[in-house]
Length: 118
Image 1: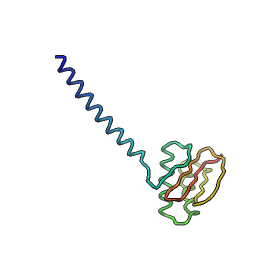
Image 2: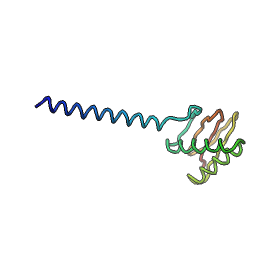
Image 3: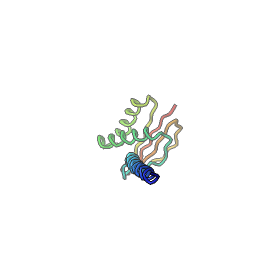
Image 4: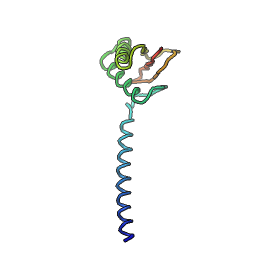
């Protein structure tokens, strides 16, 4: 009798372990980023970071001029999260900004700073 209960428990536990391992693998896949991406600094939540990366990627594929890329990222974030977003795009620059929300990342060797001010 005891062996039967033990076997049932063991089967359930193993099934639970397999299910949890599958869940962890799925969560890790969701967190995987583009190999050409390096997030330098941020104080945004993960969902907003993901939106910033998606918007930046689409802007980089649609435009080949850095000024247009920055304009597209800024206008899309203004639409998504309200006004007062600013964007800096380039390969070599310095910056010092005041911000509420901020992300600085490299995507395909292009540095992008997106921040919300006031």
